[in-house]
Image (cartoon, rainbow, N blue to C red):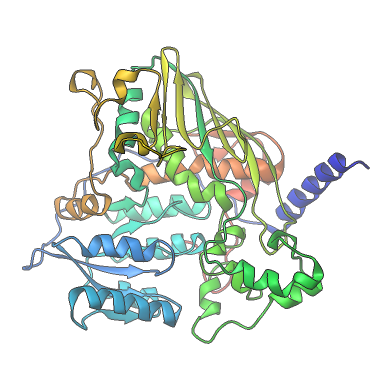
Length: 482
């Protein structure tokens, strides 16, 4: 067997092995009506919204600081399963307010039971999103929650149901919607300035990023075994035995794994790097779908829509590897109105960011341009288009704004304002749900190795019982999905 054939065969084996171990209940269809405005909340005499933060890892600190900067918001409590992280959270919060008032919690349910808390910021690994968010909604706490909405489509549906049932205000951490150049790009598309949209290109990262900077430590210990990539560390090998260690005393690892399958503690796939293990995260595809696909949908007017056909191809490590998420991928999605979306990571023909291509022009937007040298603030922001006139100014010229999209200049400010007004945020729960669905379905296509047909009305996969199992996942006892 030649090298290329060996790679293809390994990919088939990996997908089949994953499917055997990913058994889950069939997902129930969910019909999502338009977003409703919640009932009025009693405003405290101080006119401040009391917020509790759950999760002090990668996104937690930045989100919390941005909330603390708002004069009508008071962060009053913090929760984390790592004592060191919790201490850092308390030090940061009390240090800002110059007091010792921040309450600490180990169990999120105790924080949510407090009547002193109006809203919560949730920034925990993907495998915990559904349980914490649905409990927060039942407790009538307004929620600022990180993307993707949840680990599976079934869990996302549960969150949407809980938010709607309890009339909760929800803001997703898809903060690109609160930046002017993303808003401008989406308005150009929605206003019809590039004509009928035929193709959308969404470029996402590929590979694995060592966000926690813990990989070098382990790779140094594996040097004698000539292993230079954690995706090559497999169970039953000397390298795996070296990687597995007892959990540190400051971390409640049993609780941290929570509803996911119990696995040995490995430092390099917990803090920040949990996203490279399908037991707890979704790889680059799910890590970024809530950003650039979210913006693609915004420009298309598809915040409550989705694809009908999804076909993907990708490269995977072994399914039981230390880091096992897809490293390179390309997904083609068919949308209403004859729109084709290409969602790719690791392919040079697809530029990072979002690009809409129409019959009369194109628009591309990203967080920053590929080269920032000697460029204006607008150019550094990452914006380009087929018409030079559209590049002028922070916002689209008023006479061209045939469609005026929701405007927000500060994502956390928008959340607190909506908590008070009970009006929908710029990134409500239904939008987060539909923004992540292409990523979830893309991953299912990658894992099964075949095209997926999706019914948007019933939110079900058509004619493929095996693929349908991946719309949900099994929970480890005693945890149960909502």
